[in-house]
Image 1 (cartoon, helix red, strand yellow):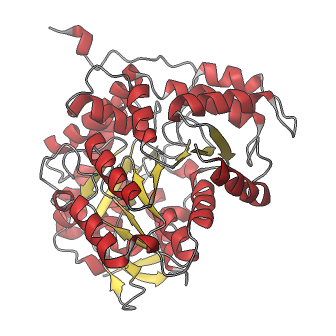
Image 2 (image 1 turned 180 degrees about the horizontal axis):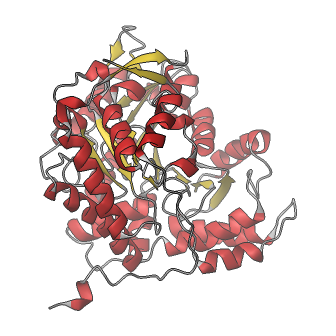
Image 3 (image 1 turned 135 degrees about the vertical axis):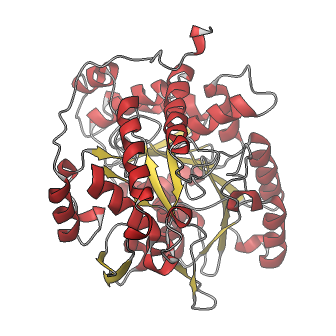
Length: 466
């Protein structure tokens, strides 16, 4: 037996534990009803197994906590910025670095600087929701161009996060390169079930963009996990380190931004990196207006210190093998229980096909939310509809008509270094039980949503259909 590849060989051990408060089924049913069946209104302490997001939920290491305790909180040029800056430069290979308080702050600044006129279009393999919002606020239209294979939930393809190169070229031809300020590549592709992008696809898309004078932006929130998939699946990368793969990916971009709340293993923080000094100065001016000084960007010295350590820890191959291995383990537990999942599982979450789980619930009655609610009530396991018709339906700016969401997924995102495998086995049992209830589970209708359609991702109130 090859014990060297046994995933029970965890690359860490536990030093601090957080108690979980378990509630009863009756209590959870009342909690959900009071919250309007929206996890955005449920207290975190009332969710025993919280798989709603992997963002900002990582367990930090003793090295991170040690760095945090040694942090400097001076306003100008605190020492921890320079450790942070070095870590980001080593990660991206870029010259100029701006700290931000999280990823969406970075997106805001990037869109504000790069989108010069209304009517622009922003292509992507698939935009993250907040990037869409920022682009639209500045008068641009975000357009998703995933490959066709991504829409087949059961098709096995190593890089279903790729952008469709032909559609990208058609868009340039139809809209004109002058109307495309940048290409947005999200790695991994969260909207498309956390699927990775191949290096070959990124390189080809970037070359096309640059040939036409279009800048390339990489959303690197989960780039280390994407790099792991490239190392494991793409020819020519088996003997390259995760850091080398990340730096090559960043070399094809003009701007890289990152929510450090994912693969940098921290609870708050982000950055923007570029080799373009003019862009750096323009983005820096906005940083000072909206976030803070150039060397702290809305973060404390403690945050910067934790990121400087965590960004390096997140590039460790053994850690990534364990982290992505745990996601695959959870997926396998669900398969064994006949729960329909998106295949293959991505790097940070398992996405359950709620339309297959509850074929009796039509999309307009929100099967993805129904599954998330049912699993929470039955066993205290929380997951979000992501994407689903409730939170991700968009109004087409050209026609004024709603564009339906392509999927009804309930996403169960795995926090990094937090849960035991046995807890994920328990979660799989609970989710399978919720699926097995079948037609006993009813859908929902909207009771209230905010006027801004983008807020529906997290804020709404529903009522059960009898």
